[in-house]
Image 1 (cartoon, rainbow, N blue to C red):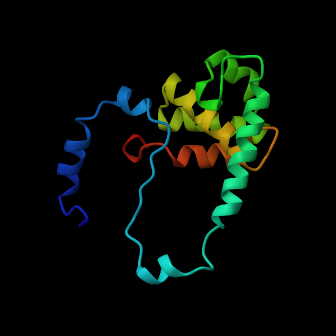
Image 2: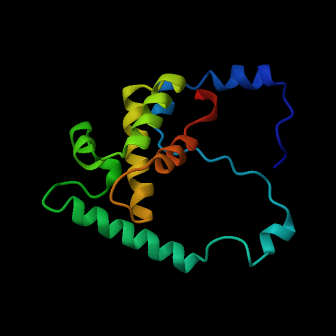
Image 3: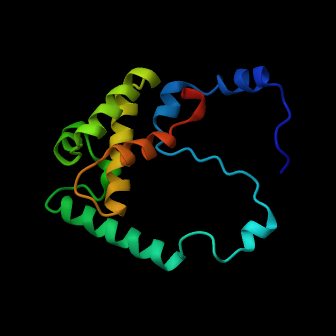
Length: 147
């Protein structure tokens, strides 16, 4: 697939056709650039799949234990009340999220999506509370045009 060569104004006009409320319902946006053959075949790069699989399994177990006795299966299903209960932030994380709310003009839905994603990122470590790096990583997955 060839990269888009359209002028930025035309790209922006096209992207505006997708509404903000619709984009707010998508948790993760990841831009995947073209990768060179040498990097793609370099076995030294990246975390081994087995290790990633183990971290994901451990994270899912944490979530299963967290939501035992409820109808929830994972962090993505949390309601705002459950987010308040399970998404504890340290002071730096609270400060970063507060600044992001203001600078990025996050909606309530966007705010909750960032928290749920940050909780999942913290679970992958595993970490008990959400810290500023977890919030920062979650914010990186927001759609670029909303930033």
